[in-house]
Image 1: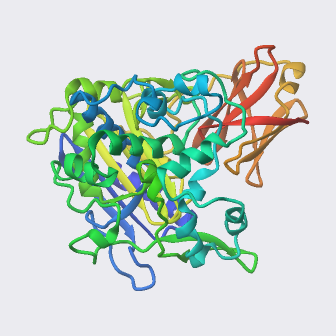
Image 2 (image 1 turned 180 degrees about the horizontal axis):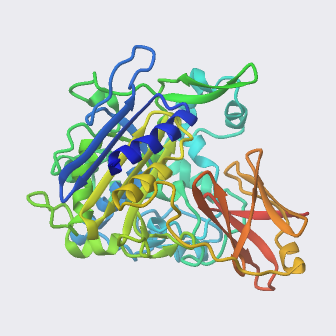
Length: 471
């Protein structure tokens, strides 16, 4: 009889092969003790150098949870309140009109609910490093960069946001839309309140107490730089999609709080103990139980299954108990962490190429541990009946200033999502809510109406896109 590990590894190998993944490192702990560890491929494919649980990968947006731990620590120290207005610490901050700006709080930044539409400024913050990256040359990203300002400081980011002419999504707290720019500015708040740089604060108050010696913002700061992955990316060469070595790390000094830590499986498993134990993680109590509980509260609805806490996503209805998770993606990076405290489980998946369905690996892992088929859907899909007239309301083109475009088409009595040159049939699950299946995942899409009842926005990839035309 096959073990759950064998079932998972068969599933994982197929997914990794499909995505042409050069290397992956996966670790799962139960009650703080390693339950399963496995590497696939190489940290350097060309030289066939092996991976380990101490190999340093980029973790991208998993950094956001570290930023929120820092904010909660400063609240515990009495130096701020998460319900303080952002302008109390960043008086030059403006998003929309001045009156609206004063109602945006730190909590809204932490939950992606400041009401700001998706912004294009992360690439401006990364522009200097992207311009030096040979892998960018000849791509659409190179063209997009030309129109962006250099955003090297927090002040320049705030100036760019103040000059953004996009209409706000709504009142602060009413609309969830993933926002890297807001998270970048949480770094500015941490600096002004603590008197230290963001990077210094995180190192001294989180990484060092938890013994995370191989977690850094700059790999050159590592004492041992040998066990560090090479980055890879997908690039079309002479019309053929290829995975190429692209070892140049992108950086954004003004947005490091949004996603620029590098770490390892072992270090992240140590970090996840904070959340698995509710703050009672032995000698290194970096957060109180109350602060951990606030971070893991379902503050903002992401989709029909998941909510956003502070820097982490929470799924209260996950079959094995509350699921805590967050992923990350940048060039050369596909990452995911998770914890299921009711089962004592924590886990990390790190991959050295972008664009991998890394959350499917996590779901496959959790399914097989629980003796379910690796590709079994986590939640039942119940179809909601709609008339042809109702379906027609949603058809149209949608886009955001963050380079995302989507088309909703009605064909033969069904709706289809057209995005990234792919087409997916949509399954209605409620009024204004739909699912589509991508590989083994069901992905949620919500539509949002104006006060007059007209469809004006849709959610895709955790962002809200504005309806720009009928179809």
